[in-house]
Image (cartoon, rainbow, N blue to C red):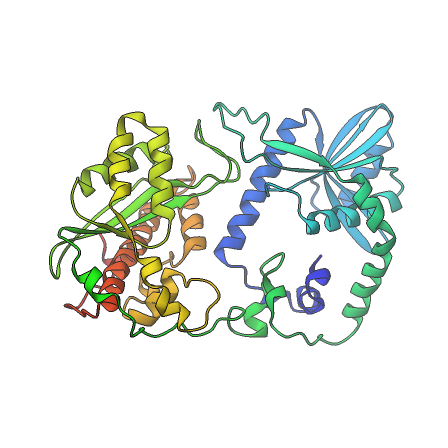
Length: 444
């Protein structure tokens, strides 16, 4: 699959694996994939996990168990054929019918999933197992967790046997291409969109030292909606919300991949240039949504514009209102006060020729370089945020470490809402007094 994305990636993975750099978002994705796999095994009932210390032993254990008569279920069954080794997530044999199920943390079957399953199938059949059916198990986005470890219905299966059979004749050519790549010198390959599709490449820094198409953020535009921004009434609330998304939900009443708020930051401007900061975070591991809703309602009150960037805050407030009927009207009233700076900032990123709106981070690098995320500790982006939160709430994390992560998360939130203050000033042509720079090490 690495070769199918980019021959250079395969060469580096085999010849120079020490150059691989996996960002936090990728590492978190790996971890969630393991969580989904563990749940899938519980849903399959009794089975045998093939987990010896070496791959050679895994091959032998798989062959020994398959040699037995009767029905069986194997997890991580290991096969080798044609120079390729694979491990099947689930292999079931019932009444003589063999069925392989590959488990994915995605919510729908994608083309690269089928390609992957085709390679797996080719190897398993080549190793002597006459697979009758091949299925992909993906997450059902509409599943609602009932609690108490009941994940029945989390996964839905799609039979891909016919699609896999169509691809089977092409597999030997793919394998030959891999072998030819590894037998030669480092392939030449320019950075392109393929570097992030279908997976982010861990060798991107080696190839380019930058993200694909990482153009410099646009500078301040002369098309400033100064009048509208300057006329905003006081108090002004600059709000940022942070959410966590899990492939396997852990709180009753929640869905897979649902963005659930656990933190907010708000800079309050009572008068021009007079800022005070409020914030909330819940890293207890309990469901944080109710406390989030109550504290944000208490802080934002009933008057004054609430400045945000993008639609996350709107989506969060709407979801909280649907979840908590007693807070619904207050949350709706806050939602009606939202003032989104993203469309106001469109002239800034459009002036650069960008096809899509720049993220808040992109804009802050242009208009507020003093808010450098390097001072924020471990959390400098959404991928870091997801990883830090998962570690902070894990029961095995020491309290000192959890506190350190919480400080970094809070610094990240404070930096975002200070950025909103700075962005409004820049768009309005009002520099204002200097802003403090969040630092995770200086937080209580």
